Length: 188
Image (cartoon, helix red, strand yellow):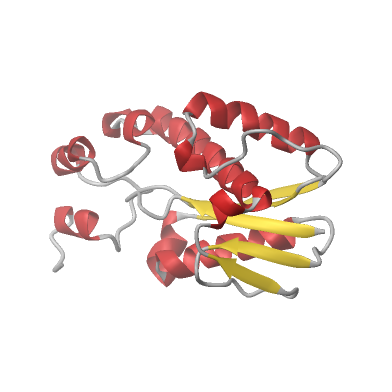
């Protein structure tokens, strides 16, 4: 009962940071799991469905922009991972965490730098988190179409920065992030 956990959405300037926790079934291997950033969107979607169908257990959790602004993105990422692990219906024997920091957990855990490419359970969590965050950004695009979230997923691309200069910020923008603070006229 080894669980992998990872997050998606540390770099964007809007929207949540999303984490997933996955316990894979060794009797039902899934081909092609890797770091979600190394996979095409189409491949991530297909693997996400397969992971949800074949994993023993999985859970997704998040921290929204207000929480990120209140506690900072690192702490929000760790909290989202903690929430995902705690949302599992059983306590894992051990948690493998992508990165070099550990969330607060009630079970043994190990931080693994580059773990999403080294351990299938972390890679699976990476995929679920990325697919869920992208899905949410498409929904936010429907609510705030002027920001073109469907295209850049809230990363600070030149196009996104130009749009917040033109339209200001919306409620899901992370007000503690420098590009957003600049638009708000706050000291950087």
